[in-house]
Image (cartoon, rainbow, N blue to C red; front, side):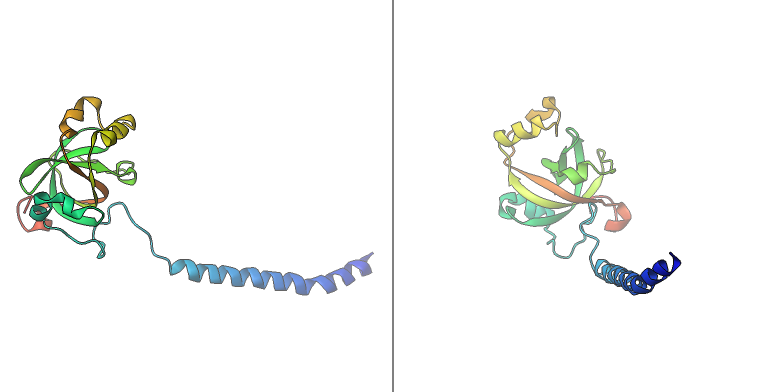
Length: 175
């Protein structure tokens, strides 16, 4: 019996060593490939160089000019929270501009309160009654707050945000 076992081991050990070396080589290749990948989009990453920063005064003068483009606006001041994902902000001394927080933003651990200064990145979309109905059904804003959103022609869908602190702007908030 031992001679059969010895013959079997003599024939299979090269395969075991070869398989081990192949797995080891695959792991090295996998590590090299994964280390070359980026970290992806982070919810609070608004400093991406591919996102053009738009002056808040230019944006508020004509938000429709920015349809279909991802833009960055800084700073905006949180005026009022309308629910778990709807916010009214002040942009360039114009109060009541609506923001809708995209799912990754409102499901993150960030807490936004009135008075916060934000740097926001995202997309401008038309706001109409049909869209308000969909957002109300999804519970993104409180039903009693709907009248604050009605009559607005556009909204900003925030896919990324950062908090802006006075020392980052070189003076008082909003500068």
